[in-house]
Image 1 (cartoon, rainbow, N blue to C red):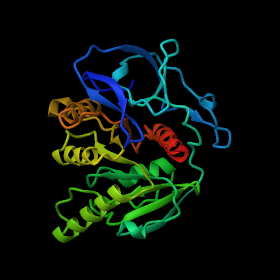
Image 2 (cartoon, rainbow, N blue to C red):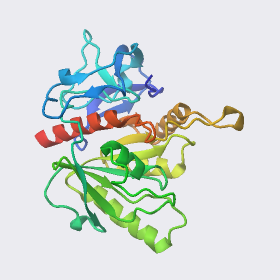
Image 3 (cartoon, rainbow, N blue to C red):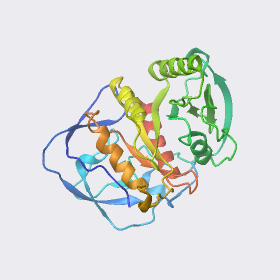
Image 4 (cartoon, rainbow, N blue to C red):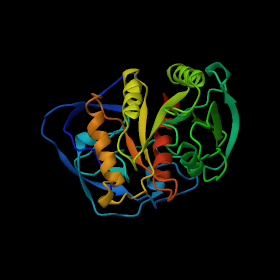
Length: 307
């Protein structure tokens, strides 16, 4: 079952600075739809044949009752009262006509940069992964491309110190940005990371969206809320990726299940945001959310290329 937001939000409007539809908070009554969730075990045909939504094989699941106003509706996507939309499992994202060519065929490390001007200049679209140190960023990147050691993983937080570009299918990039919030890093180094990371996010013309990683196995952190708020204030397109959703804390020790932490985080960002971004629950251990991330990236990427 997908876990979605539980605070009321009003009819949608389009924001000119963003690739995605924005939602505005309101107290208007909710409209409920019966939606079919895509299973994370859904199969995706090779990219050469993945041209329409009909090419996606779906494992049917019981319908979910979800408020229409809580969905992320991609551009040029209309909801029909006669035909319920399909949403990606473990997310609030509606599948659009742009969801194609989602499979990863090839992946290779290209270069590391310490300034935006040194990043690849071929004009290909890119998605940046950013999050608090030790959130599981490198592990998620490896899971997405199904390569165990494409991105270096370390038990010591703060090892990613550059803007690392990975070329996917020789046509687009995944970008691993330095983690934030690692107190043990030297102060001067933290300042450098902060400067060139923010410069990249604000000035990179080929950046389609930032994927902000949040650890769902622990309660929300203030620094994550602040980073999400900063992205929103600067009108940077963003998707929240909840990581480590396979971890189950023991209730008797005061721990919460990932679903509860996900809900708590959404409740908290409602205080910062006038709009709720798309989000996906993931696990690098079980590969939960991998297909959903790739489908979401594909529809954002294909819309970006068209426009």
